[in-house]
Image (cartoon, rainbow, N blue to C red; front, side, top):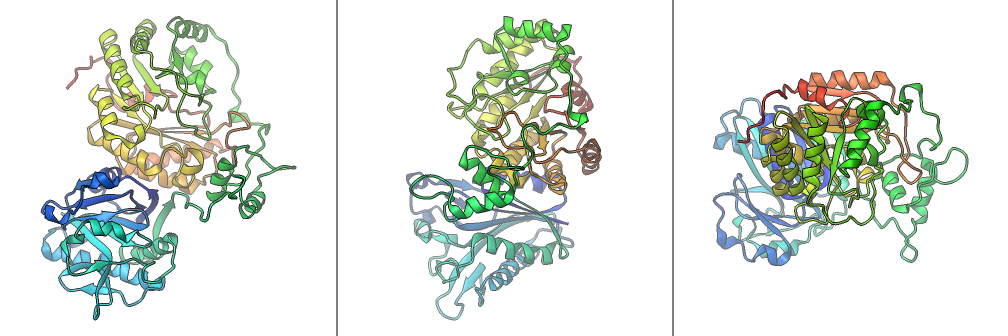
Length: 568
């Protein structure tokens, strides 16, 4: 079964690391479709003379990669496709097998272009790719550069839909001086990016998916603008659509104050949801239990002047977990630079870092005599390292005071910066946790400053280093069961070991509404499915949160808390 993902705009290096993980770890077939920010790429044998400018002078990156071909360009308006396939009968990966596979990719694009109104595309001898006007002045509409090893493919194609062709003037594209690139728009074809992607998916499914595929899309951006030019309010067309979906005032309606949140939810096809005062089902009702263990732990937190995500995010399990002597410490202050639609954490301007915070966390861990500790942090996009340094310092401080304690870190995405993640990993945590949070379609509505591909890339990078890697999903925000199934498949495909799944509970009327109450039996089905997909441990229940029963999941991941950690 071909798994197809439309990922929206993705940084080139993030997409590359995600590709590599799927290529090496997974055996199933994927087709990743996306756009890149401005970037020049080149194979190992590319001629430097074909790069005509300093990329940084134009705000572009330049990346050397392990595929054939010379310099090429990727950027907005270009549909990039990465088929990651296992090809039957082509395990040699030699020139003949590679040429046959390139022919297949070309054919998918030729047929898709004809479907969207650009017939007459074909092949130009000696030059891989898809071309127009073969008998006149050939123009290249799609470049292809692939790698095939042991029957497994990576890299792929770049199809110019509405690309700014001036970028190609800064290189000799693919080392070809005699012919120029073109785009669908330059050829008079008005098909949208989505139209072209749909056509490519249909043809790819026929060729590589036996006529079928499983597809998940990040919500497509709406054009033209969602707002009227003069007021910043939503335009009348979108207002009408929001009304039809159940937003607005009146019986059965749910209002979200910020127009931008309403717009993103509408683009993702999410209706109004449940009223804030809707009665929770019995399985979600928790009892306030101010027990002795809870009071003891709260006293320790106050003594050391520490923040916990348990309090800042309004976790419903706080009395149970604190009563059992467990908590999740939160670094880098109490204020986050993101404004995710489901999260209660304060989003005012962050305060300066407290350099003594790692020591105080370590002291509290020692006082609590924890066998397993979870350390998280707010997102700090205002810091050059994204706050990764505080993670590393805290891990070191805990190791010094409590060498037998296993350490789990729940990290933000660090804006996709691989070096920040490396800072954390090199400090030697036992588990690296990063929550993907929701399904692909809802990413922009739920956490607009993050991204589905970015989170998968971070998880892939973590797994590649050998770290036990964990992620979490919150349900009830507008997804359907099948979308959660696909997200679990993606997490398993990149090598995640532990997954948590829990019900979303709306903190306030300014947050996105609850779309549904998911019954316990559905969580049990996801738990079983995750194990079938190859996930090592799945904690799934209505009240599960990312750090809920973290020590049990650590034990399931075969971490031995009795053995002191020895850094590599």
